[in-house]
Image (cartoon, rainbow, N blue to C red; front, side):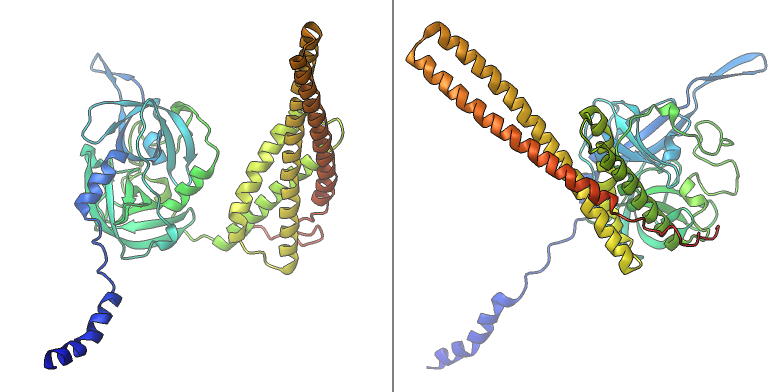
Length: 438
C-alpha cells in the first residue's frame, strides 16, 4: 500500500507537466543570419564616365568611380542610397564573394528627400530581403549592418538602435553599428533578418554617430508605380561635390546623405500630414469628377481608359493612407464616406463596361459561328449539321441576352455613379478662411 500512496502523491505533479510551456526556440545566431542575407546583398560600382585633364604637358584620363552597397527588394530591383548613383552614367553590381559584374540598366524609383533609390539589374535575380515593421522599432534594439565599407565587401557588423531622430526631412535611426564610405545603401537588419533601415552615413566628429533611413520611406517608394529612367537622367544634388565622390564639399559636414543634412531641423509633422491628406483627397475628387463627366453616351474606350487608370491608382493609394490621418470633424468623416462610396461606384462602372465589351465580343463570335454552321448545313443537308446549326442558334440567342443584360447593367451603373461623384463636397468649405502662410 505504501508504494501506491507514494504514487498518488506524485500524480498531481505528473498531470501538471503537460501544462508547462516548452522553452522558446533559440534565436537566429549572427552567423546564421549573415549566411542567409549575403546572397541578397550587393556592392554597387558607379562610373561618372571618362574625364580628361592636362598636367605638365601630359593628357591624364581617369574614370571617377563611386562605391556603395545595396540589397534586393524585388527579384531584379536593388535598393540603395540616391547619392550612390547620382552623377553616374553607368554602373554594375557584384554579389559578395563573386567576380561576375551585372549591369545596372536604369532607375525605377528615386526619393531625393530621403536619399533612396531603386535600380533595375540586367539578367540577374535574387531573393528579396523581407522588410520589417517600422512601428516595432525601438531604441535599444539589436541590429546588424551589412555592406561594403571602404571596399571590404561582405562586412557584417552588430550594433544597436541608439536613437530615433525626427527633423525637417523626416526620421532617421541613429545606430551604433560602424558605417564608412561604401556602406551607403546597405541594409540594417533586425535579429530575425528583416530590414528596418538603409545605411545613409554618419558624422565625422563624435564617437560612432551613424544613421539609417527608416524602412518607412522605402515602403512608400516601392508602392509607387515603377518608371525606368537612365542613370544619367537622375537629378544631381549638391552640384559642388566632386564627380563620383560620396562626400559633400564641406569638410565639417557629415558623410554624404541628403537625409542627414536637415534631419535635426524642427518640422511641423501634424500640419504636413494634414496638408498631404487634403491634397490627396482633392486629387481623387478632381479625377473622379473628370470620370463622371465621361459617363455620357458616345464616350469611347480610348477616352475613358487612360483617365480611369490614373484615377484607380490615385484612389487605391488614398484608401491605403487616408485612415491614418483621422478626419477632424463629423462633417469630414461624412464627406470621406461619400468620396469612398462614389469612387467604388466608378470602379463598378468600369467593371460593368468591361463585362459589356466581353459580352459584345462573345455575341460577335456566336454570330460568326452561326453563319458558319448555316453554310455548312446548306452544303451537307444532314441531321448532324442540323443539330450543329440548332446549337449555334441557341448559343447566339444566349449571347444576345447576355449582351443586352450587360448593356443594361452598364447604363444603370453609369446613371448611379455620376450623381454620386457630383454629390461629394470639398473637404474645405469655400467660405472657410485661408490658412495663414507658413
